[in-house]
Length: 171
Image 1 (cartoon, rainbow, N blue to C red):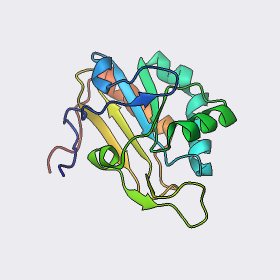
Image 2: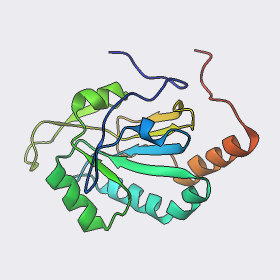
Image 3: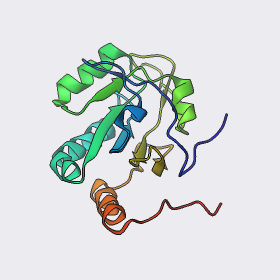
Image 4: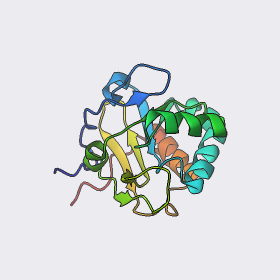
């Protein structure tokens, strides 16, 4: 499988949104988009991280950044998570493991005794620029390692205001 890299076009994955039509990030052509992949309902750190993101929605909106969430949780579980946590951001459910792998997300087996069986993806953050190219990729094999959302926003501000290039292309 090909690993995505900075400056690649974002893969043509169709994300199934709760209470909305499926979307591809190419539907947001000409806009900045930040996709946050979270582990799922079972992850308290995900809920805390996304609560922080909700606190910053206005700041990201000031920079014209569309925010999306995604997980491998099935629709009913994702809906439960959104309702229990009062999330308002567009949330995609049922991302396949193949799609998660296409994004370079790490895959983990559910622990014994969990309500869902099988596997899920670990967290990731993807910033897509208005040209539809991957500006920033951040993936982790652990729920405890995630980029600071204020630092990410500051990086977006610097990139937008100073026209900074996509980094990490030298190999």
